[in-house]
Length: 61
Image (cartoon, rainbow, N blue to C red; front, side, top):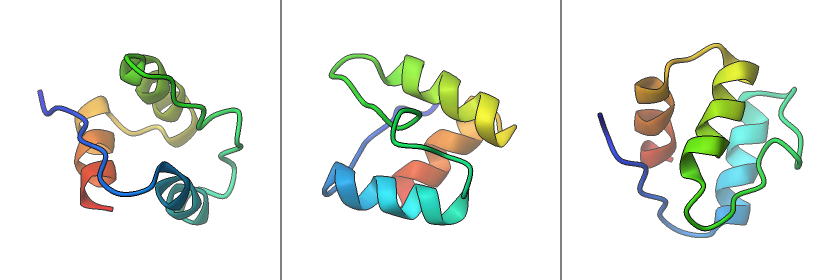
């Protein structure tokens, strides 16, 4: 599995994610250090994408 590697400002990434998926909220995108799996789980529920798809997409932002 790919590893989530966030580059740049988390606030910028959140904005891009919200643009792509309008139903994402700030609560969905709360990121705590060491809890990337929890964040990805929430995003999987909202987007219907697999973990690997989300990791690749987020890393490409």
